[in-house]
Image (cartoon, rainbow, N blue to C red):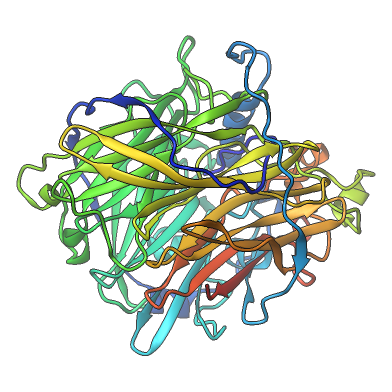
Amino acid sequence: MDQSVVRRACVAVAAAALALVLTVPAHAAGTPVGIKKLGTVNVREAAAAAKHAQYRPALRNLPAAKQFAALEERRNAEADALRKPAPVLQPPTVAGQRITSNEVQTGFEGLDIRDTVFSQGFEVEPPDQGLCGGTFGATTFLWEEVNLAIGLFDTQQNQYTPPALGLNALYGVGPAFDAGTGKFGPFLSDPKCYFDPDTGRWFHTVLEADVDPDSGALTGGANTFLAVSQTRDPLGPYTIYAVDASHAGCTLCIGDQPLLGADANGLYISTAEYDLAPPAGSPGFFGAQIYAIDKRALASGGTPNVVHFETGTQFTGTVQPATSPSGRYETAQSGTEYFMSAQDCEPPDCHVDADSLENTIHVWALTHTATLRSANPDLRLFDRTVKSQVYGQPVPQRQKPGIHPLGESHNEPVPPVESNDARMNQVVFAGGRLWGGVNTIAMPGPRDGIAWFSVDPSVSSSDVRGDIREQGYVAGRDRTSFVSFPSIGVNDAGRGTIAYSLMGDRYYPSAAQTGINLKGLTSGVQIVRNGFKPEDGFTCYEEEGNGPNCRWGDYSASFALPTGEIWSATEFIGDNARTTFANWSTFVWPYRP
């Protein structure tokens, strides 16, 4: 869900292959765990039955949401932070690229705050962005899911679902609050989706936390929900599964921000395991968790093998699994799924260090994935630390002054916007490489940029390697501009784009991109849809029980179709989406490298 944090970002630089640092032996064997089949949902029927929820804005601060917010305060508090020694590294100096406005007319404004209000009856921030696409018949469909809303579009901008369709309907559970019964439904957050070219199935995931139906407070039960289509039809029936996200020694567990990847044999979910009510003396963080699931069994509606891995890392909760655009997976070592991660927090509690600067990333490999289909899966997890360019904790982003009625009602100026931390964002395996990026501080400024990495991975029976073939920074040449939350979409030819948000002293929050290929960046900072106003949501202001920085992100999305076309989506502030307590929109657009 929301793992928000604060500070810094960057721009372009070429790099030769860099030497690797440390090899870590295979982790202990994974543990088989159970998976529950919850039932079947026909999304076409659910969409037809969807009705607008009664507007109840007070629910924007749900009891469960407040408990999640306490985690963010704990991770970002100064008092108990375990700081590393004074860093010898310096923030990267980034000249930056020219910022141009060249709006993509074939893109469209997707889900916005009104869809969440229509489906749930209250506002939610930040807009966590899910996007995936695949072909059914002669039509290429796009699922977009943002927080508690979900919508089906096609690449010609037609929409097939009503604004009142809530994400909860996909999983066959009640809304966050049912005005008819007066009962609270489960807490859902951090949606992701993926269309699998091998099986022709749509896969959706979301964080789920059980709540007391009368009070709405968390009760301690936690799962990752998984919805798997039974055919290629995105509106057809789905089989719903639940993977237990509890952990030994954890009081009030969550499997935060489920991340989604796939190879030829498996579907992979990675979560950050936190205890929202840790006992005295406990750090409340159990590291990143990886769940490997038999993809073919999921596609057939069966009960799949699931193998759970404790990664053992305390330097991040975000170990990003890779997807592949056209099913060109790593086949070595009886099937391999790659992951990447960054160094974005401090052990033992994954505390955010405002002064953090790093010069390594991690490449992971889960081998023998073909054994997921056997009676006794025998997977092996490897990790290698790779020396990289410098990146570090980003700074809060500034935005262009403008009309902001909610803030003005509190006599507040235009607020700064969170850039979270330097965790690894979306990872793709395409053109024989792993591609990923992080938010980072950049100088002069300080301002925010993106550090990106193009890594050539390889795997053997005893370890994984990762040579950085290219790396660099994306940032505006304008020293008062900020770019953040990258998603890299790359096709099988190794050509694609980095999608992200842009804002600054001269820019309202906008959607932007930069082209990329096997040799590096191919364009500057292109605004694909200009923002119209400042971000002005309820998370921006202390008078609303939040603030002082607006929540943004926590992630964008970008993927390649088998045709080679890239589709991306990110948050921006449009001109026609406004409710009492929020005003975010999303923009969805194609890129033809």
